[in-house]
Length: 398
Ligand code: FEO
Image 1 (cartoon, helix red, strand yellow):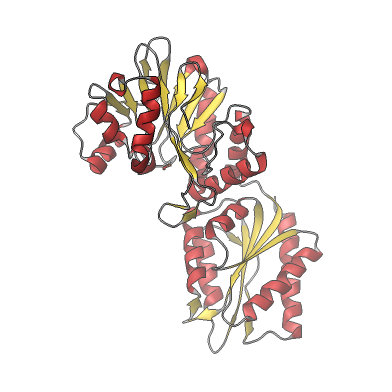
Image 2: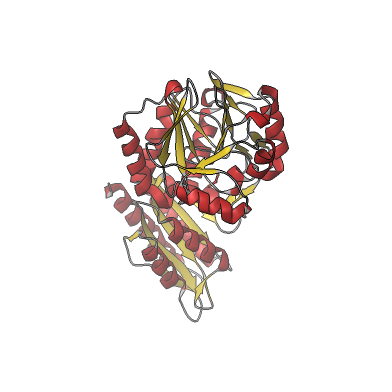
């Protein structure tokens, strides 16, 4: 795949990782692969914005060579230190010996701690600009979107924002632009990315978008570091981010559970019937056969979640423990929940679930429902009612 023109004298020179199936260790499944986007700007001075994961360094360098001799690069902008974007910086700087590395103060420290390089580094902060000739790079610090070092780079002449991780998607494609790919797949991957990577930082997402609006920057295209470039309709992803960050979601309820001998599963199945009887959409996921990253994505567009587990060793089953840990870390905005589960001689699962929900800042709308051993007909009816009452509360929640 050759380099791709993004705008006048701006080229995508990144890499498509078709075979990526997980990210951040194994915490995030990337069923559709990913891309590591790097952008080359040709002007009197030449700038490379970000690099790629190290195994793709040579691929990126070959794409740069189609356009210029890499030794001519004057600036390597490191919007973000994480290895999927800085992994090839060492190889680039070996070729571009006169290049200055540009990044935030935190980026300088973190890059040093990753690669121990003796590089010429220029620290920039919000509002700082570097003139390349016709084009000017403007920098906007964006701490925690996705690491403390993160920043956005803006090219005024092209109304192009390069926000690194923000607005990205783990989506491998032979296409480079939003209007060339299936819109449902695109938004699904963008939502999964937001939920699994940025959800915890939602207040910062809102503030950063407001800050950019206040700066009055015209934005005709958003070129993130993963997935396709938003050029056909960049406002679509900005609006989606605002909606997700504010916790706006539909009347939808997820039922997420794990079960040892089937009793908690029977409870879950009765509950979804109760939810359905109120006309509320519901989705059922059993751990661990369901993908955790996919469940987190589905939760982004659901107001409520019912969480159930059998009791083991006075707590929850191990796959549920992992799910609750993830939920606590992400602290999803504006969700309501309730717990359920079966037990034998001693309970404990629902207590663990409720403790974790509180730590995740998720509002519990009803006391947990439990069943000793196997649920009988009347207990299953209670589970049905539990689901129905929960659905009513979700509909009332704004
Ligand atoms: Fe795509 Fe935070 O790295």
